[in-house]
Amino acid sequence: MSKLQPARGTRDIYGEDARNMTAVVDTFRRVAGTYGFEELATPIFEFTEVYKRPLGEASDIVSKEMYTFEDRGGEEVTLRPEFTAGVCRAFISNGMQQKLPCRLMSHGPAFRYERPQKGRYRQFHQINAELLGQDSPEADIDMIAMAWRLLKDLGLGDKVVLHLNTLGDKESRADYRAALVAYFEGHKDKLSEDSLRRLESNPLRILDSKDESDKEVVANAPKLSEHLNEASSAFFETVKKGLEAVGVPYIHDERLVRGMDYYCHTAFEFVTTELGAQGTVLGGGRYDGLIEQLGGPAVAGVGWAGGIERLAMLSEAGGAPARPVVIMPMGEAGTMKGLEVAETLRTEGFVVTADRSGNMKKRMNRADKANAAFAVIIGDNEVEQGVVTLKRLDSGEQSEVTFADLATAIKTN
Image (cartoon, rainbow, N blue to C red):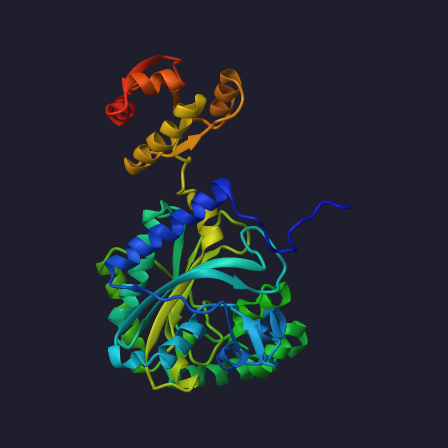
């Protein structure tokens, strides 16, 4: 029988990887909490329409990447490919419009069928933040500032660059779309098959094509900044001034787009050069039309998501695991007392394991391999005398310590 392996694009997460990913989530929760965000957990799958309606039949996510299937009840459901649509569905389902503005943070796995590459998997994990019910540019500034604070707290301030652009309002976007279509129609012979398809359904997506031939065409395409109306220009200027005021550096990237029609105004990505060609580690933007498109009220929204795997690879924020204290009991009385001592030390915040088998030499060898800091030896005689033998494994020094003084002795050694 061949060795069992996880399905392609998935992996088992443990050890250093697990610690680093947990550290990303913990830091995200802490930082988002300082901005007044509350946690929301949405289901890992939704009715397919929740994703298909806003993302569009022609989008790559819907047409190529979603894990969609019919359940035993005959309902078509889809594993979560991204968070925003599900969060907006939850907003509508739970009547959250009565509590605007809503600041919602989420995290967990998502699923897309795409080619696995460094830091990208078919089952991946994201952190996600959405601010619903505020249509001012100051809300965009807050969201970007929160993302920047998170990245700095993860030690990534010098590893990422903020790319910023405006998509304008609905009027500006429609004007720009028409100009793009007219331009690309004149260069159809040079466009890739994917871009020809997007020309009919989603021409803005051609701007971030990775095809070399497309890039040559895009280089001379019209710029959105040339089609902004006065209100859109003013909105973007406020965002830029606000970011400068709060100390968030950025690059104005006129080729940064969001393809869905519900996106407007601010679009942004934090990009690194340390993870290969696919360098975006966190990105988002304003989507004032999404909740309405899902059948809810007209509520403004701005949000972002970050890949936990990619952030963890960059930050290595989890550090080394805490060095354990190993209880090594001998005899029946020592074993029972060892259980009690272990719980007492855990109450004091120590990481405690127990090794109850084999001779003492084998136990010490296992403790060394586990990078333990101390061994606590408890035999029947020690129980009678009210003491333990405490051994510091780095130096080999050992001493007798009373049960009452054990925690203090470990802290001070």
